[in-house]
Length: 172
Image (cartoon, rainbow, N blue to C red; front, side, top):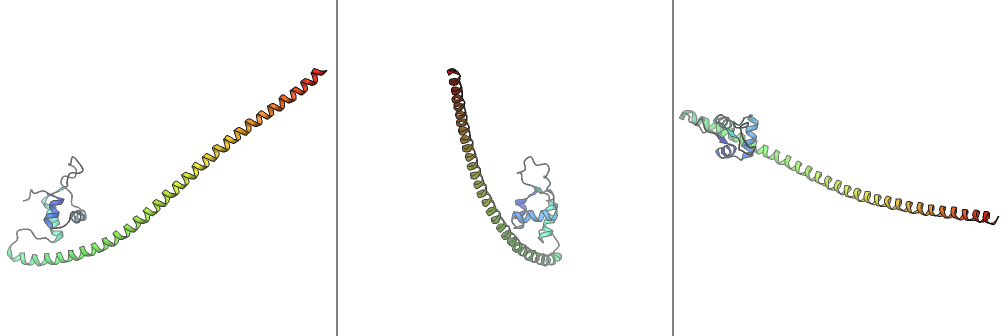
């Protein structure tokens, strides 16, 4: 039995708890998986040795080992008391977790609202920037047209003045 290897799912089934609960207990006890560094893929399940199983059993107050009959009744009572404490602690933890979850959900909704508003502001700014660029382009085009017309008028005036002077010199 010492060579037995347990996955997170095996431990959860063994103790009748959910995987997340077992994962938190493993983390709290700082238990290290025997294959943590040797897995080929990160998706491979972590494996724990029998020592980890024993430490979890002790932490959870579960009695699954051979004991002499005299100690068994006393250990069962301790185990029941420990389990009751654990159940009470777990219930308290669950209530606290529910409160934390509610707060986090409200914060998430608030963040989503802020994100939506910033997206709307971004769209408005992009639309205004586009309008400004179009107006600038139109203004530049009008300036170019007016400058070309101004140039044409100046050339016509110069041509008109040359003709007048030319005609004056012709008459003389």
